[in-house]
Image 1 (cartoon, rainbow, N blue to C red):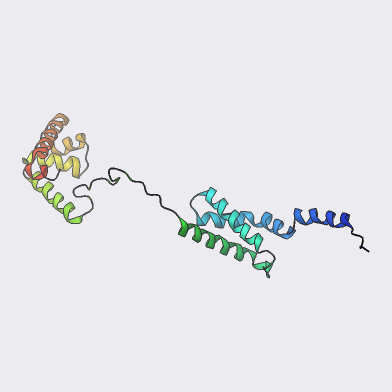
Image 2 (image 1 turned 45 degrees about the horizontal axis):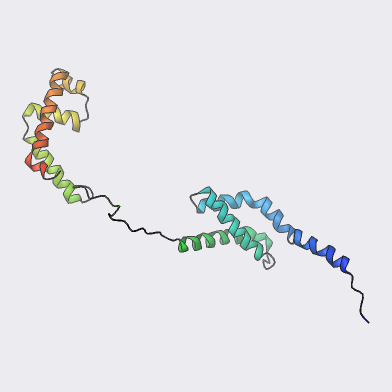
Length: 185
């Protein structure tokens, strides 16, 4: 003889288990999501990446929900999942390399990063300025090193603004043609 099987009771229980197997997890996420999202945002630069990071950490927490004994320490557990997930993402980060005909780096500029080159350029510039006539030298120094306007330079030297403009223009022309500075350019 076969035992009678009640299929209606087991069928009715199955959808209930699938709907919310962990009702406390859903309430935990609903209550703590803003705080956990702030933590995730502190770990990433992009708010969208922070949401993805939190989603992944919560998925890991959901899988381990039954094994977590102390539910008072859930925030610490989720934070640790956030940090571990972010660290894994960082380690797995892939750098795409593309082959190109020319390197994307700009050509080094003379006097750019090397302190010795910068000092050599500085010294060459001051030597070239020292070779200018006294009046042009004074106007160049006031205009470009003291950062005075043309009117202020004219007032300090007691000349007209037009005199300052023409003298500075001639001085800059001489500096452009200075043989010591031509090599640097």
